Amino acid sequence: MRARLLVLAAVLLSGLGLVAPASASTGGTPDGELHPNVGLIAFYDATGRFRCSATLVSPTVVLTAAHCTSGTLGKTLVTFDSVIAEAPPSPLPVAADPAAGYTAAELAAAGYLSGTAYAHPQYSDFTDLRNWNDVGVIVLDAPVTDIAPAPLAGLGAADAIKQPRKTLFRAVGYGTEVRQPESGPQKPVPMSYPLLRRYVDMPGQKITPQVIQANGNEKDPFGTGGTCFGDSGGSVWLDGKVVAVTSYGYTDNCRYLGGYQRVDIAVVRTWLAGFGL
Image (tube, rainbow, N blue to C red):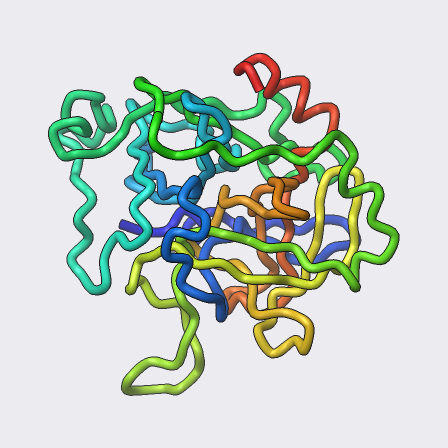
């Protein structure tokens, strides 16, 4: 199974340079049960099976990115297990009919939660930063009763930040680890395993009406790492509340700036209100 961000084409944004949907942790710390409401999702679309990260924000709603929900087939798998696999093979099931995606029955039989994916109707598919809207949800087929949902930051919470570079944002997700391989060229590259939940603390870089950008280099003296392949849709926290979801990165080794779709803005919150949030 490939991480969603590995197959989405990079797009050239005016004044921004190359970006691509984000997905894995550069640096970071194994999360354990520090953020039990952050989960992994897996799903099919017309080109294959993919995974992203997501966050429980109500007993029946999981928050993620639009590029993790747009065009999905069938149901989406959801799990809040902190460790998915230390080494291959992946325990995630293969759909009986990949062309139709997962069914609720087969996911339940495999011991996973299931839900239906929805993408923001104004998602720009990485073409318009002024109307980015890279946010989606999974509406669960059954409520989660043993995990406390994550609180959402108040409307305009990020606008109150006057010095982004002095503010630490925490990103949580199941992104692939970036490290030197055991043999061959020693250039750090994203690794598929271990597949587990991690968190990183990132100093802000700038805040726009749609996006928070943060410095994801683990060698930054003020941060601990950044997001990469597999972290897409994972939550970004500010003062103990979810203020954004992981959206994109600038490099294939995940050692530069990352972009995070704000969820504290009116165009997102109005849409989320339709799901009871």
